[in-house]
Image (cartoon, rainbow, N blue to C red; front, side, top):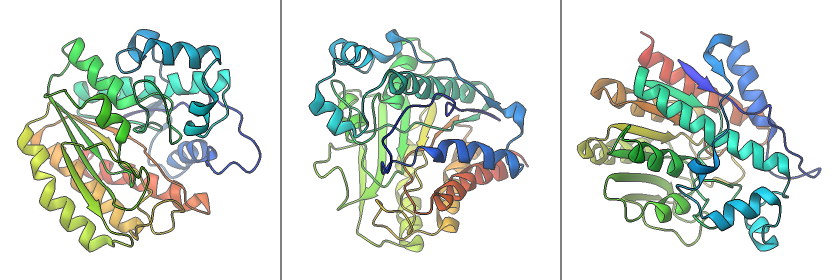
Amino acid sequence: MKVFYSDHYEFPLPEGHRFPVEKYRLLRERLLSGDILSPDELLSPAPATRGQILLAHSQEYFNSFESGSIDPKIIRKIGFPWSHELHMRSLASVGGAVESAREAMINGVAGNLAGGTHHAFRDHGEGFCVYNDLAVVTLLFQQDRTAERIAIVDLDVHQGNGTSDILKYNRDVFIFSMHGKNNYPFVKIPSTVDIELEDNTEDSEYLERLNDNIKKVVKFEPEIILFIAGVDPLKEDRLGKLSLTKEGLKERDKLIAEICFNKSIPLSLALGGGYSVPVENTVEAYCNTYRAVKEIYIR
């Protein structure tokens, strides 16, 4: 299984910043030390190109972010201070999504140890998202005819407003989102299917509603599923408001992987959010995603 990482593209954050950027490096190290992935399964992707980014984003936004002339109001929405290093890290993260999806089309499953940047809109970023990786992958695949019918299964606890806005008129895209009803973003852009969850939803209700509704994605008959396996529904997550356990999240991921495996639908994984304190809870939950996928695909 090929898995792409970009944590070696470091970018500066002020001391005490609430985004746990160290989780990416810690995850890669834990996947290796726990023998979940082997060194030859981990690859560094080529950064996304300007042309690829412009499939989903305006030229004005890309140029201003690349040069650092970006409107300070947009930077505040994104939540990171601008730096050239952040721009390069964002390109690498999207590059990982592209290469993961291409690998999934060839060998059935692949992953990106970043991404799920679903709050980025065509002309601005927000919510820790600079460029929208899965919107780029979707439009790139449709442009070069790698795949026409694409499903995005977004199980981050926050609704993917940017993805839904960029792809809202694309009839060959099915966006399934299951997220916290009372959580960010407070103005949500409708997906194809939105499942809203009340605060403190636990494993049993979550898995029942997922199992009942994911059939709509299968019925769409996608040529690939792009899966945002966010672990911010975890009960320890600072920004989640739900009450899932690590075991419940692993069952969620096994459910998605099993559907893709049984239906021969290529599966490409993106990390999505995770903000637990301590960060080890987030890292372990991310590891469980890869354990779950391996249990289904490596039998």
